[in-house]
Image 1 (tube, helix red, strand yellow):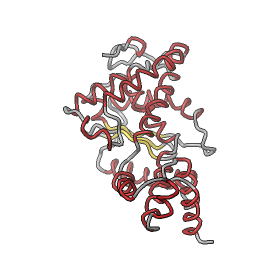
Image 2 (spheres, helix red, strand yellow):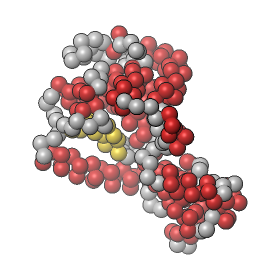
Image 3 (cartoon, one colour):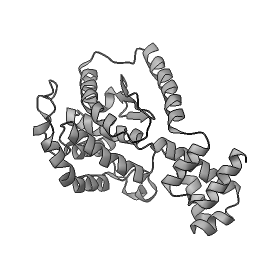
Amino acid sequence: MTTFNKIKNALLLTTITTLAGCTTVADMAGYDTATLNTDAAKNYSQVVSSANSQGAVDNTSATAIRVKRVFNRMKPYAVSANTTGVPFDWQVTVIRSPELNAWAMPGGKMAFYTGIVEKLKLTDAEIAAIMGHEMTHALSEHSKKDAGQKILTSLALQLGGAAIQQKTGLNAEAMSLISDYGLDKPFSRSQESQADAGGLRLMAQAGYNPESAVSVWQKMEAANGRSNTLVTLMSTHPNSGQRIAKIQALLPEVTPVYKAAAKAPTSATTGVTTRTIKRK
């Protein structure tokens, strides 16, 4: 049986909106964890090499030192949280850029841009909130699930949709919406919420106050300078108000983890310990 027919059969047996099904289809198409991690490592090496050739890799600034200190403190907890069955080779590169950005590739290859730390004046705990969020994307294999979703959506459109509509209950208009909004978005809203929740636990385990995840999104909202309420129904990212509310609802669960953890050291830059950081 060809790979296409295998995927086609899987498509007819599973709902295209089930993330577990997306992972299965991704595996069948060759997007297994080990392969994705290996490919990501190669891509990451190219990105870092390119940045380095332009003098954009930052290893010595106060910002880079802080980011790497937070990373080294959180890494053991990310290693313990790995349930993929494949060890991750965690790594972070600090890139000199004014962009408000940070990301993680499959297998734990990460980048932090100086702009997000310096423009938002992030505390160490706020750096940890963003880092934990990105680590959880990698640990949850969201890129792998997205690969499966793209395969499923593409095949659903190729098959004309009749059998799929009957199986999933989706009409042609809904199928079109999946095509419009399911392919080009970085992560789904549910994946973003999962990354927020997992990130809270990782930062709490590492001794960073999880309340700082709230202040991160308050700062991001202020930097954005506008409300995204009107596009929230089709946005892959929850709007800031919704996101903050969900994070606040999780605080009673993760705060005891933070209180039981050895506290992270005082930042020489912020001059405060993560224990004393207060949510705005």
